[in-house]
Length: 534
Image (tube, helix red, strand yellow):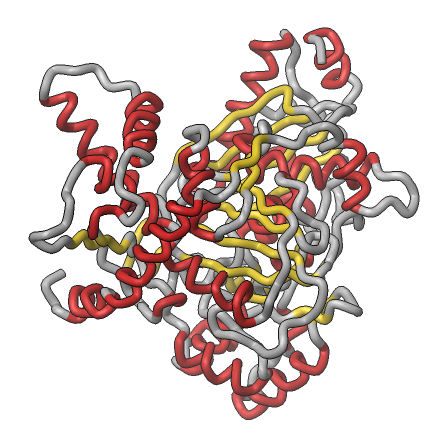
């Protein structure tokens, strides 16, 4: 779109804005009436580990939201010479799951417990037995029940529990709602009803009946909405919260807030059956849209939904690129100590491409990128770990290949269940996230890891913020009866096939050899966690 057309779309509010809270960056993306990004802004942040809890403070949340919006608005002004006063629609997305309990005064009663916390093992096991359904430790219901089991004082005063994006949406609109994709990360969903599973809701209420609590489960959870449903409008108070300059006007329609898994599906056009996407950044997860229910529940597989409410199997690993990024930072320090100026994009690209020169099995090297606990392999805590034998071929290429391989190791454990035990079919797998920024490297390694072709679209770098902007656009631009699948196919991705890489047979064999070593070496990671050294 030309500069003049983009400017006209901004002035006439034929735009949609998406803001997504990632684990290390909050990004705002503005799209025009052709759903193409025309402005963006971001704000970097990091979670904190406080008293054994991975968390972000409320102040950080609002500083980050406002900072990303201000950066995007400045981008609009610099590119088009206009002040941003309104948009056609707005959407908020964030990392899925977690636990934010509020009292009647709207006060957060305990620090935000993010998806990264593996502290609800007892609750998770008991709820799985009760529901005969997998309840991962990250899910809000597991956090709530663990708080009940722990006799935490705040439980009796709960008025509302929610996830990060639904919290922000609530403050911007006054509405207690959540997109069904992340509602499925709070509590099991009835796919036919597009709502929380009522039988399981009643089982939970019966389970806690003797606790003497004043609330029932539905009283304190957000209402589940599917893509395209009315989720309220930006209020005067919300506009001031979002835009501290005071220029943004109230009354903007808002789409249901959605989790990063849902926005990843939208941003890669992976909402149809037999399609899947892999999001690889701080965490990594594979989402496969299913044709039917799995034969039984698996602890390693989350059952969630697309933003439209269709069934999805999710193989999620808490850990992906954090350890890899830390190693790249060490190489940056070395280069600077040698008197070199370091361009981080060039450094990442050089090291990633070096990995492709390594032995397909990484020369016998092994590492675990467990910054935090890893439910897929049974760890409540993690210890980043690199090990080798005297016979290992310890080269830079093998070292980098090993670090890229291990980013996908825990997720592969879950995918094996879907592909081998459940015979799930995948016609198309798309990659997005930081692991795929260096062209062809992460994409080829993923193709080898899953033994299937992997596509990366030219728009993949826009990520989930673009995905939630598309959901906001769908809210106001869909035709009557138009499905999300049709909207994405015809109005967003038509003609955009991206680049596709097929698995390399030698790479597949090498990754399988690495995974055999990975599973045998789990006892080394266990010893590191249990040693008491750190």
